[in-house]
Image 1 (cartoon, rainbow, N blue to C red):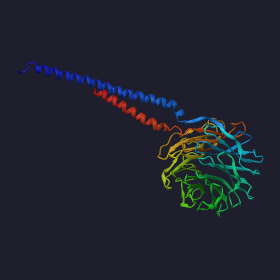
Image 2: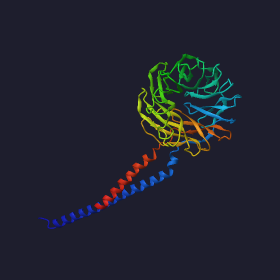
Image 3: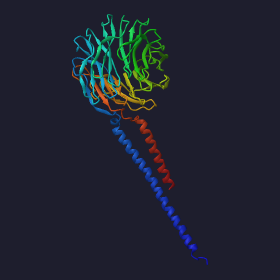
Image 4: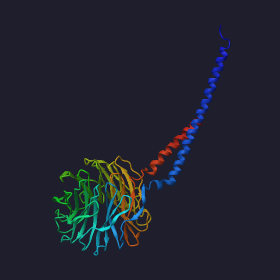
Length: 475
């Protein structure tokens, strides 16, 4: 027998479904409105926090405070160089006025991973007549290190290049030694690099040796300090001057030398480089690093990682719109360029100069330089992190003390990414220039540029606002 109430029950069920649907629809609409409101509130809060705390979170992961490295601060201590070992220990060298009894001499200080000093500062040069300066230092992961410098009249004719080897306890190995065989005129501004087995290469500029002005020369050494062959010319193009060389070496002993060459790119100085195998044979010919060639590009420095990838930095006049700016070019291990050269400094007012670079095995690298007027008092020291993959992060100020000038920075990094920046600071130790440093734990905090964060967040807020209004009209 048919159920007489079936139609009534069916209508009731249908009405209940409609009521449930309407209720859920209202709930969902309220939830969507709540989600849009939450997005707006969260994004707005994040932007406010970012504006307030952005300068602090982009100041890099500093370890402790900046501190004075030179213990004796008679007159000036300037032109620091730094190298780090695998364990995070560091060796800093500099030139000190009058401390060795006659003009400038070269001094150094070993530093523990925790920033404490390993022994006292020590004199590097044995020969003290006249000036010894422009030092450079390199170290391997076991802590052995080598210091090179220029010395006036020690080789009998102008400046010559000298070196001193040290074991991992800081004890000198043998005596200081003359590097250059050609002693006529000046041999100056040396740089040095060492591989894990202790083999090393020293490079310098020499006057009149390549037949026309200044040229770049180098010499290879075994780990015991014996020479591998004679000195050799690095630059192929020898018209006018090739100056201010720098060198970096990979773990397998292959090395790359960079320098500044006058007139080769048809416009004052340009940046060039030459790659070498571990046996000292050239890999291809010398190549131009800078793409922008107007005015001067000079004073290049190089860093190579364990994979053979490398970065070269330099200062370029007029390219960033106001005075000197810092530029860089990344390279694959085969020597081909990664993309184009790029501007390093964010602040472009006045001059940015004296660049230095260090790279980690994973491809992250840090560039440091001196910037004129940015900290409102002479030059200040700044730095910025990059990645070989193309990511860049905000520049940050290194020096805390800003009175007068802080400049001539140098940076070194160990395989774990811990690094240290050192510089010369005017008047901070109450006696002209002194050497100061700042330690960093691994790579600095990787915060992108302010606009790179705010723009996406602003876009998200706009989408949430449009979504909220559209749902309101539809509802």
